[in-house]
Image 1 (cartoon, rainbow, N blue to C red):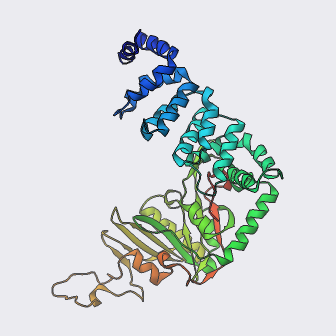
Image 2 (tube, helix red, strand yellow):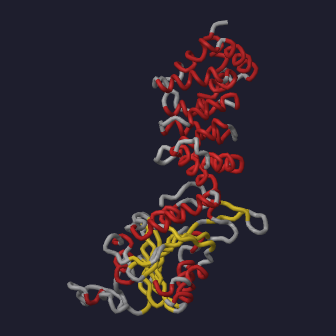
Image 3 (cartoon, one colour):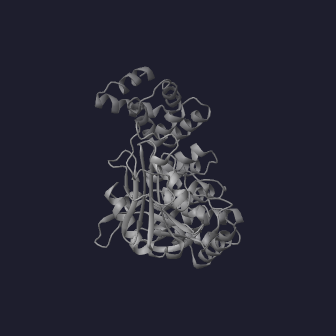
Length: 424
């Protein structure tokens, strides 16, 4: 039977005809696969790839090699290659591992995605994981998923590789990075953990702090440097560890995880970063939904609670896309001044000494202009510079004391539960 007739059967939608066509086409793999791939020109829907993927799955490794070669020659698009290479089973596990070890980011990503899909535990997969982390640049994101998926199996082998003097320094570094990606600092042995802690201590005094940008959407709190210790109890933060600003910012901006709670049910957990003392203030960054919760009532309750523990607390919230702009000051458990754009009223509490009242602004004409008597400074970006520290201005000229802390938002989870590595 001619290939053209079998291809028609493949597209027929008739289950029996399709199944028979798959079997017959697989018998002619050498000539069929190039024909199938040439026929994909212009195909942009996964549904249209499904019949071809069934044939490729049936053929197995030879079809994998043909798809990979066609991808290299640009005969299939990156999107098509990504879909087609997801069609193969365990027979191609080592091929996926080889793809994961490829220095090309896109190919490596595809390889790790499919190692995760298959849950493949192999020496080839472990070598690919080490190789991808040994390159000294960001590993593909599915590599971290793979490291975590196989962490319990890979950990003893990676630790052994770390201590193998016959392995190259590059390989040993890759093994350490793979351990961190799979289980965080808790995955390291005592010797490596001590080395990381020494590196952090050595780096901290020479670091120029750079804080997260508030562009588009961001929030943070500020508390006095002399009384900041109360913030850990106030925000229910646990397992705090010294950290560089770079690592703390990275962790606070990273994704949250799901972890088992005391009752066995999953709970969402994140990380919070408390900065070193910056011009007399400590700033707090972390997941808004876990540390604050409700967008408005949660802000008020949180800043009052923190001020009760620290004497004073300031809260700043910006969402340029949504039009939100909020700053709040609380002392000893009570809000004394707040501004919220477009709320009614926008200002509450007495103006603070540094504020310029709207009625005192040049050009204000009481005959024509209206403003509440307590209308003062607008905008969190303006207020933070007067109240404490403008994160956007933190840099070489900032007076830095002490070190930052990284903590988790729930007890009993530890830092090893979070995927990926942190830039020290």
